[in-house]
Image (cartoon, rainbow, N blue to C red; front, top):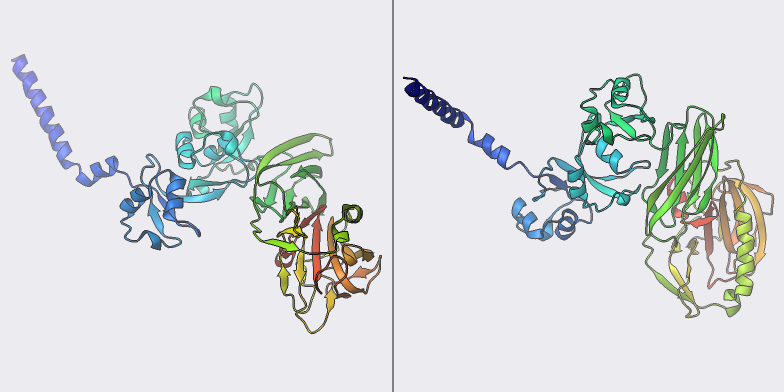
Length: 470
């Protein structure tokens, strides 16, 4: 009787199992076995080959997954399903790594498992995480992104950390992408959901509430703006791409530094350093590599001039004098808003950055400003912004030259004039007549050459016509 009862029970259980399986929708089983692949939004300049290379799949796999009939007609903002990314779902976006983030901080903030993050971006080393680099990330709602709220102190236990953050001590390591409490090390930042009575930590320093660098990535020949915000008086020093930074206080708790990137700075990684100290002389140092991209100037120009004009015995002393003038820093901002064009009809006939050869020599030089042709009914030259004239006179290479100090280490240089209508010490205002277009110095025809110096570096003046600094 016992044996028969046991057999009846087993048969009953098997029947129940078959019944439950039958009740499960086929679609549900299919959804578990074949989750929807992630989607990628097509960006300007994308091709199927570029997208396939980015994700490590083949073009044919993308075509098959999306039913593409004509591979040459994918449109910007179209969403493509990307096969082969097991464990990754949702809508993928391209994000620029902000300053102060490392490998661990990125995956902790977005709760992205390390293996998925590495696979998605084909990362071979944490050293590849540099500010300004572009990474693929699943798109998250803002409230789902965690923030750093605590920097781990020596001998601080997971239980103590959890108490401060009002979190479960057992879930704390996993929410910070750690294998266990032993993985949470001193000086690391711990991420958590929003705490109503506690402000997130700044990843760079506890002395500041915000630090922003724009643009990121850096670009050859562009002007870089660094903004720092602090709720206490601080002193700032630092460097960018080998150039010393000068910080200026622009308001209550607001500081800025404006620095040019040399037009032939080597693309790749360049270092940013900042030292922050408060009135108690407690300081913190921070350094991070930033991505520097090429300016893509592209053009070549071979110019024939009097050999005297390219003789180092002539060019180098003049260059040294100009650098000594533009390296001085005035702690007053004379200008306000974008700069204005220097002529009545500002037609540019030679852009910034083009490589130059003189008299069939090597292409060792590049155009350090922009040239305005004679396109107006007059030859008038106007001040692009307010400032003080710090040089006005003849030079051999630059001809009749005027240099204007706009403050904060920003200078305008105006070369090749036929007439100079200002003198050293004059204060100029935007639109004020300062000279006449000419053909003096190393010039091959009447034109106006205009340079902008930022932190001792010549940058693309168009930045200053199109943007307002700081």
